[in-house]
Amino acid sequence: MKVLLLNQCFRPDHVATAQYLTDLALALVKVGHQVTVVASCRGYDDPTVHYPVRETWQGIDIRRIWTPGLGKQAKWRRLVDFATFWLNAARILLLLPRHDVTVCLTSPPLISTLGTIAAKLKGGAVVPWVMDLNPDEAVAAGWLKAGGIVERTLTFIQNWSFRRASRIIALDRFMAERLQAKGVRAAVIHTDAPWSHDHAISYDASARESFRAEHGLTGKFIVMYSGNHSPCHPLDAVLAAADEMKADERLHFLFVGGGSEFKKVQAFAKTKALSNITCLPYQPMAKLSGSLSAADLHLVVMGDPFVGIVHPCKIYNILMLGIPFLFIGPDQSHGGDLARRLDDPTYVRVARNGDVPEIVRQIRAAMALGTRPVNEAAKTLGAEFSHAMLCPQMVRIIEQAGVCA
Image 1: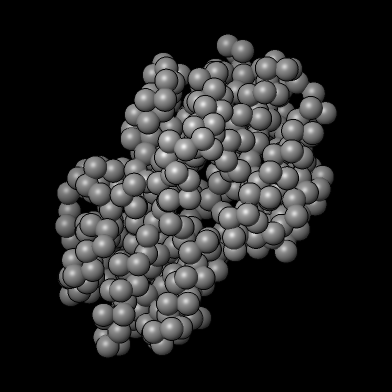
Image 2: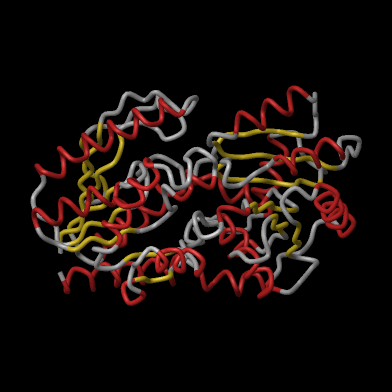
């Protein structure tokens, strides 16, 4: 079966969608499918990084698209980059042969529409893998006016492609409900969370201490936010808590990753002259076990308006590591669902967005308990979201779509 994977990011980029798409591509090749990937030739967070325009890696045919790489400093820059990607992707898809299944992620926004058009012209099934929902996200973030002509037009285009999907992958029940509200038939929606990277990451006590020593954090109680820093995961209350707790020399806040809000965290630490905040870029996969294991308390943050629009992917690696975490977000959300399933306030703590006193209280309570042993109940729950469980399931969904096309 010929499978086309369409997304802005692919390996060796390190952002989450690149990692998940790489895992899927390798799994498809392993069971004998022909895989072509169409992605950007520039790094997601650092557009000065260039990748080869054409290469074959692990049996995967990779076609990369030129974009101007204007960055994320302004909305118009993003728009130009997205539009260039969209137009160049359209050219490549028209030149490629027919594929049995086209799997479309959601970066840049509405890219599933392009996959749908190509499939309509050439045949084959389309499977959107909805990592986030747009223009819903843009409206929730205040970038688009709800009900305006632009929002209504983009929503119409999005819904047109989703309703023609052979299968559509929602990441949680809240996202599935949103899709059904858009007119997508329940029968084609598969609710499957993105898997943990347990095949590459595990709790590593030695790497934990090495990572802490490398960054001058030995002996500290580390509160870590690792992953994409975006308005969907508001960190203002966390930063306010760090400012409030700056006198406690035992405590350190570690922000690892990138995204549009990463520089905001750096600027806050600089403006407030906070020595209890360290910011590090995304860590390569080879160092990720040590990086994630270095935390005493992980942070998982979900903005209230973004439930069912984005998904807290980072939570699955945290569960597999068995390290305590603080979920900051609404009770009715996927994070809230998992917290209730664990039902262990010494391991999973909960606070609401903007509630700085409660965030401070929860961090102090976690510090009072000290470094906790690996939580086996969390690892058991995490196994439900393992690579070994969910990645083959995704392959089967794609195969089913191809058979029915």
